[in-house]
Length: 331
Ligand code: HEM
Ligand SMILES: *[C@@H]1O[C@H](CO)[C@@H](O)[C@H](O)[C@H]1NC(C)=O
Ligand SMILES: *[C@@H]1O[C@H](CO)[C@@H](O)[C@H](O)[C@H]1NC(C)=O
Ligand SMILES: *[C@@H]1O[C@H](CO)[C@@H](O)[C@H](O)[C@H]1NC(C)=O
Ligand SMILES: *[C@@H]1O[C@H](CO)[C@@H](O)[C@H](O)[C@H]1NC(C)=O
Ligand SMILES: *[C@@H]1O[C@H](CO)[C@@H](O)[C@H](O)[C@H]1NC(C)=O
Ligand SMILES: *[C@@H]1O[C@H](CO)[C@@H](O)[C@H](O)[C@H]1NC(C)=O
Ligand SMILES: *[C@@H]1O[C@H](CO)[C@@H](O)[C@H](O)[C@H]1NC(C)=O
Ligand SMILES: *[C@@H]1O[C@H](CO)[C@@H](O)[C@H](O)[C@H]1NC(C)=O
Figure (cartoon, rainbow, N blue to C red):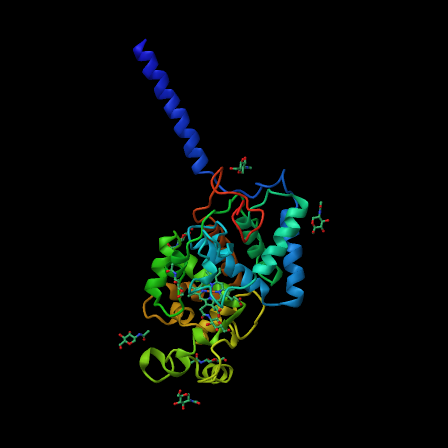
């Protein structure tokens, strides 16, 4: 009697823990909305395509939102929450303030999705889908996006300050930040290839043009022709908010020119050029591989976007499906 009772208890505990483990380990998959919002991918794509008509930069801005979301407590749309009584917005964190953009387009996507399937699709999944549309509509690869993320009820501004890499920190520090979220140097090089489109503000690289590392000289790894051009875009005492193209060759196209730029010493950010110019770094040969083969770059980029999109998602009954991406439900 006593034996059979403890036996049944053991079975119950095993069944329960298998169930709970299953809940917390729920994997994202590409068919998550196939019954509840089968057309979600084309709805997102349609809004991104429309936004690109009036703003050729918006695809770059949207994929960056997904990156800055995923690096802070996982891909949970925490970056989209505005300040409120309980939220200290990640939008005001150092890497995001006066820098991240595209929030209005995310709201337009959310509205379009809610009009077709209300209360079903998370804002975190919208960011992942918008990133894929942005890349594929700009000439890059397309892929089947894994879905099933849910949205956070919290933001982590301090985490955004410390977890998102800065263009001024060295390769080893950036490698550590990627490694902290389970991404290796192949992921780092492939994902850095997203700097094949979009813009950067002079304040984020002009030290390289005039006074690199307190030398009163430009960064010695900067191509001298490119230096001349960049000094015109970013005069010494000009506005730090002026913009330069991250890829000077094919500015709004998603291709592998980013990597040949690095080989030509035309990486815009210090963190870009270091992938190629750091003596003995394991990243150098990966840059060379991606420069010589666009298909190798595209294939690795897709795999790394999936890896990044898998960073600690909220799944099952964790988190919520926000009805407004800017606010926690009921607030
Ligand atoms: C490896 C470390 C990285 C650093 C240090 C870095 C840094 C930066 C900086 C400083 C800017 C310019 C921001 C501004 O001027 O306001 C920028 C822009 C951008 N970043 Fe990164 N980034 C990194 C990785 C990534 C990754 C992994 C992605 C996406 C997969 C990405 C996508 C972009 C895009 C598309 C832009 C242009 C955005 C726009 O035009 O609005 N970056 N990044
Ligand atoms: C996708 O994930 C959801 C939630 O974990 C699950 O209910 C569904 O069965 C999965 N679909 C496939 C095809 O694995
Ligand atoms: C899916 O959405 C796209 C874009 O909004 C639209 O063109 C298409 O007709 C929709 N398809 C279905 C089956 O609703
Ligand atoms: C953001 O930019 C504006 C000028 O456009 C400036 O007044 C403000 O100080 C900047 N904020 C931060 C935190 O850099
Ligand atoms: C994050 O950084 C910003 C700008 O550098 C600063 O204003 C803010 O107080 C920081 N927040 C936290 C929580 O550390
Ligand atoms: C990085 O991880 C991927 C799997 O996601 C693996 O195929 C690749 O070989 C790894 N790269 C390095 C340099 O360890
Ligand atoms: C900056 O200068 C210091 C010495 O003052 C040197 O140790 C360091 O390697 C330099 N950093 C770069 C990125 O050149
Ligand atoms: C920039 O401003 C500094 C003082 O703030 C001045 O010494 C320098 O000559 C100026 N440079 C240019 C190119 O105007
Ligand atoms: C500088 O860039 C040009 C392309 O604009 C390239 O032909 C040249 O080889 C580069 N020089 C160096 C030293 O990388």
